Each structure stands twice: as structure tokens, then as C-alpha cells.
Image (cartoon, rainbow over all chains, first blue to last red; front, side, top):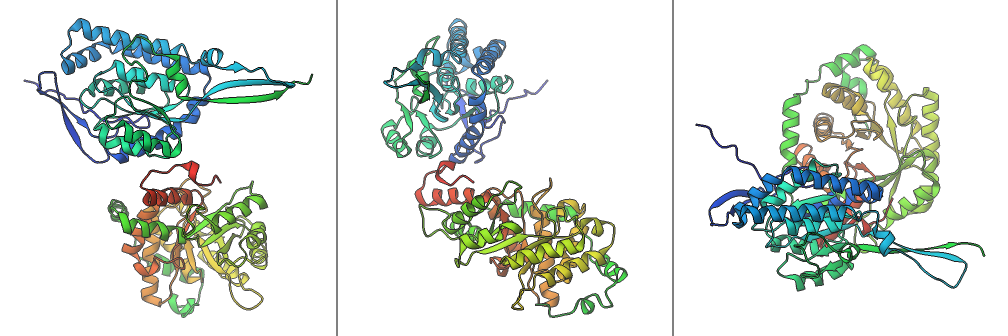
Length: 283
Length: 321
């Protein structure tokens, strides 16, 4: 007889896999209510550490060429494909979906990731602009990453909703701290293993598992977070008020669809800032 | 002020042999015990009002430092302004103890600080290597004192120390101490940098500490901040034990200054715990304990803001330096 080697589901902060600073875990049940695994329950200090890691990684990621970011994102899609079986098994266990439905969700996640990977070097071409001005200037508006994004993935989707929350943020050069679905966290942690083995710099994506309601106020009021995506939150009105303290960009619950095979450019540009440059051109 | 002469402490005339005999008769350091003790003190949790006290204390004990080849008078001035008003959003924020600069920047720092009570410390004696002839080192010191430095941070001659020439190290510290004498007969405070990262063993660090105290240093300081290994908690703890024992034996209070690599408020608080538990509360005082740091202040300020507002702060809310 052989004992099972069970996986320890940990957090993903700064490219490393720490346990929660608080030492807490919580049980995750499968679709029939049976115990499936213990998952780390992140505390506010884990969220704080994740923001520090994201801030440290952000400038390097935004400074990489758009082409390079696209390649890294495409690489992630490749690695997702290679781990397909594991995602399918976890989605089936957690949600009770059939093999076909679970495979469809993984397909959609990979397709959406590829869709986003293609956008890195096209955002400016489509959303940037050469502005007509009355004077001897070139006047150009370009879009730049806003910085650190805190996000709450949809609660009712195990993988696809998470992918459609992370990808639109990091495409443009943001770093993200994302809190996964509380009841369906296993694919989120498997996704971090994919991210860690792609060429994504540590800290660009940080994934926390735990209670959204516990962590959200700390991220919403955090002065070093530039944008917040409230999709998976419950107390979103209060959070939006807190987010206003330092004028965070806010994505409200339901603003963007999260379950498609592609995202939307609007979602991407909502997490960006416009920079306008005046350049003298003589006559 | 030295109460006992070095001869009385060593028990004979000061020669290289007598110094060697005295230093090598010090008990050896229990490396495992020291590091385990330092690690266990580092796990202590300091919360709420104690944390608020510790953050303020850390600022009051700070030597805000800029020691770069690219320092300019304006940069020194901006650092001084930061020392005068560390947190413009909270005017109750305490000020650091001193500004630590190169000798040629002393006059600019003095001018910017005026009579605010913030000291100006100058590094001297061919900092950071200490590789210059003795007359050059003394002139370096005198020049900084003349420009108005309140404190002098000197480096010991590590080459001489490691080759066993303790007498040379001793004489140099004494000579620099004399060079700290001002025209009015008072002395600039002398901090002796041991550069522990280059001393190789804990035993050597203990010996260098005793040698520096014997020669009349007012402070013993861990590092220049210019080598790979800077201040660590075990090293600081070892030096705190030395000053504690020195006080017990000879009744003279000597300060300790860890420098280099202390960047977060969390680290600073760990040091304060070690100070209290090793040397005692008497040393929790800017006259006897200092942090040599540059980026530490910003992190402490962010932690203060967190305690005050309840929100996590960020680097956008402290000055860039």
C-alpha cells in the first residue's frame, strides 16, 4: 500500500510560493460537499507583501518591449495547454462539470490568453492617437500601464474568470495582486505554477486565496495600489468609497464579461493611463 | 571621558604583545548560541502602542546618511531638509539624531541644519577603505572637525588588525581621537567603524570592539555600508554585549551603531528588541545607539502613516532620495 502524496496549496507572491503569514488554511469542498483540500487563507499582511512585490516588479514588466510581453503571455498559453489534464480534473472536482464542459472551459481560458497576448503591441496603434492641434507640434496620446492593480476574480468561475481578470491587467504592463474565487481556488494555484514556469518575471502576478471580504478593505484603502477590479467582491459600494481615497481606477462588478474566449479592449484600456506628448515640429 | 588609563585596563605597558595577550584572553564567541539567540529575539511581535514608540525611537536614533561619490551640496541640503521635516503631513514626527556625510559636505550640512539640534557626522580617515597614510587620515579628521562636524566616523586599519598589529590600530584610534579635539578643548564624538564584514570571525569582532573601546572610541560602529556583509543582528548583539560588559567593568558608557543593510521598519524594531534585551534600556537612547541608514527613514515613515491612518501607505507619500 502506498500513501498519497497530497499537494500543499500555497499562495503566490513575488514569484515564490509562501504559506500565509498567518499560518491559516481553510478546507475546500468538491461539488458534492466532500473535503477536497486545505488551501492557504491569506491575511491582510499577505496582501501587503503582495503589493510590495507587485510594485517592485511593475516597472521592469512595463519597461519590457511590447513584443517581449506578448511572447511571455503566449508562452503562458502554451504552458496552460500542457497542464490541461490537471485543470480539467480540478474544475470537474470543484464544480461537477462533465469532462466535455471542463475541457471547454480550459479551451476558452487558453484562447482568451492567446487573444490577450496578441494585444500587447497593438494597444497603442488602436487606442493611442495623433491629435490635431493648432500649433507647430506633433501631439501624441499614448496609453501606459497604470501600475499596481488589485483584483477580485469572479466567485463562480474556477479558471476562465480568473484568466479574464489577470490577462487584461498584465497585457499593458501592470502588475496585479489577484484574490481568487474563495470556494473554487484550486485552478488558481495550478495557474500560478504555470506562471512560475513561464518567463513571467516574479511579482507581476501575485495570487492570494482566502476570504475576499477579509482582504478587500485593505487593498481598496491601500495607498500604493493604482486600480482595483471589484468583480468578485460582495461589499463593492463601501470598497469603491475606500478606493476613492487615492483616486484608484475602479472596475465595477459586472463592467466586463469574464467568461468569453476573448476579452475586450475597453477592459484593457480601463487599466491604463493616457500620456499626451507635445513635440515641436518647426513649421 | 576615560576613567581608567589603557595601561591600567590591560595591566601593563601598551605594547603589541600586551594588547595581544589581553585581546586573546577574551572568551571565544559561541557562534551557534549567538545566532540562535539573535534569531529568537527577532521573532518577537511588537504591536500597537509599543510599535508606535519603537518607530519614533528608531527615527530619533537614526543617522540619516548619504555617502555616495555622486553627492552634491544640493543633495546634502535636501537630505538635511528631510531631517528637519521628515514627514510634512505630520509635524509631530520626531527628527533623526544626525546627518552623516563625507567631510567636504560638512559645511553644507551645517548651514542647512543651523541650530536645529541635529548633529552632523562626518566620515573620515580615508573612508571607506582606510588605506591612506596616518598623516592623511589625521588631516582628513581635523578638516572635518574644523568644518564643524559634531561627530567623526573613522574606519580602523583592517589590514593591520588582521595581520595582528593591534598596536598600530590602537595608536591610530588614539591619534584620531586627538585630532577630534576642537580649538575650545572639547572633542568631537568619535565613532569607530570596525567593518565587521572584513573581520572574518566573531572572535575578531569582539577583539576589535574591545580594542576600539580601550583606545577611547565613544561609539563602535559595525560597517561602512560599502562591503557585501554589513550590519547583522548577531554582530550587533555581540557588540552590545561588549559595551555592556565594558560598562560593568569600567563604568564607561560606549554607544553602538549598526550601519548598512537596515532598510525596513521591521528590521529596525528587531534591533531595538536586541538592544533592550542585550545591553538594557539605558542604551535605547540616541546617545548610545544609532542606526546608520538612508532608505530606512522612508519605510519607518510609511509605517507611521499606516498606524495613524489605518491604511497601508506607499512610496508616493514619502520623499524620493
